[in-house]
Length: 475
Image (cartoon, rainbow, N blue to C red; front, side):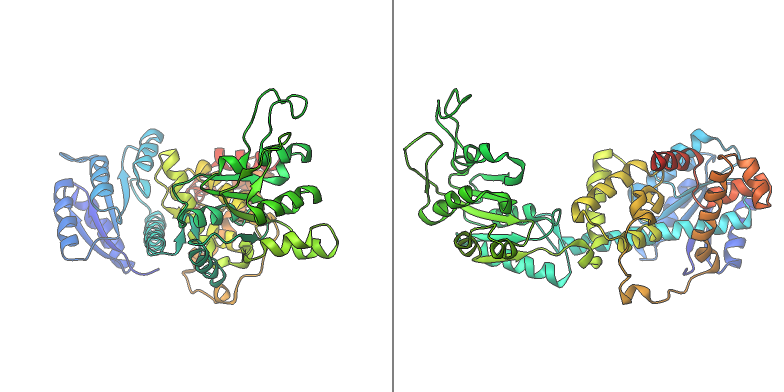
């Protein structure tokens, strides 16, 4: 970890100089301020000089501006700066409030050297995550996303190119790929970039409609066409008049329905069920399948003439496991959405969580990733989503894909950082084996309870949360 630039704010000169001295001894750059107002001036001057502080360590109880007030001001004026609060009067309520307001950590005086060291490392990791998230958002704003579709992988770049190329025409487009890869989003992107963008966009998953009802759902029916048809009902093609219709899971349509679709594509006309009246279909048709249509044609399960008619332009969407490099940007996009919905400040993911997401196989593709991020945003107690906030399968119990060569390169790091993961797993496993009894767990580990509590705190082990997550996994 690179040295941090830290501002120590405390009205007690002995305390602030002591902390600053400890930080300097660790190789960090440390400055001091005697009050919240002084800290504001120092931070603003640093911003003007383009030498912002990485971390502010601030006492909670000070004359004039309190540490909590300074924290609120820093979150507004210097959002890239992490804040650690110190207090000699610690309480659960004040700690929760500090973390809710955006503090990176909350320490009780007197502060141990190891606690301070871990807190600075945690704050610097948070700042690194914020920087990475800003870079990801900037890349998305710079054009690496298309109507909510995120991707820098060459195959996704090709998808973007094809969307731009086919959108202005009326050409029928066939999208292929596994379920959950984003075919619906691609169809919407084509519609939004076409001259039909002001018209309706109608979507139907053919596999979700029972075969006897699919024809009525697509083409509508007239009163008396069948039992229960008490009134005329327009179908999806009529609803999409002047716009675009997207038919997903087209491979599930019966041969008879395939023949009717072929007629619509060739003649641009159709008849509602029970009617002899021919109606015009002024509709652009986009289709998708979740099985290889050429294989179904070879087996006689899909009409060859319809396949040739819809296979004018094919857009193949890769599975998520085939574009691992896009996972962090996709996760960031979903996190922004869910954090906003929850009204919470969640800045990103721990390195362990990112690595777990990159190594998981994602059989449910982007849809599964989105659900995993929603779970993480709901469960996390801090400002980052950790590996334990992700679904158990993603966290390490599910199918893995090999880490790409670029990610396998050794990353030099402090020994304490490298040992955090193994130490956390040992402590969690011992707690579980001891029925979550901390006294028994400390005895088993050969340490006293105070040491165990401090290690749990530094490793972000929350007994209530982790016990609940463990119970949900076993259930």
